Length: 130
Image 1 (tube, rainbow, N blue to C red):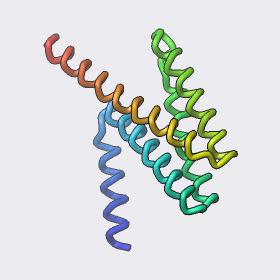
Image 2: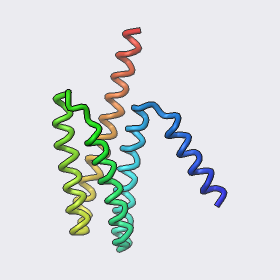
Image 3: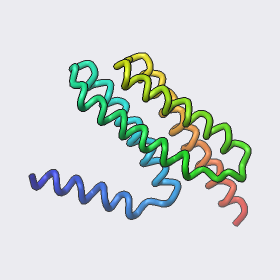
């Protein structure tokens, strides 16, 4: 029980001390983790937990979608990709389809990796401007 409290406190401090860019990265990582857990639960035939993890991944993608700045052209493309992955998660949940979960996981990993790359480019540009 004590270790569980320590882990919760660490996670909370990690969130509170993160930059906005870091928070988005945490969301992507949590989405990936939820899809991986859904896959694991599906292999164990634990359909209730599979459903729960898929819904958590969907919630994260809905949040990321709602936070897009519509003033950028890439936002529309990203919005369409988020919508596609959310729909695939819904279908994976209905059909208990591992292949659809694999597809969603691949997209989530690509989203995260592109975010990391974009924040690195932005950080380098800011440091050159100073």
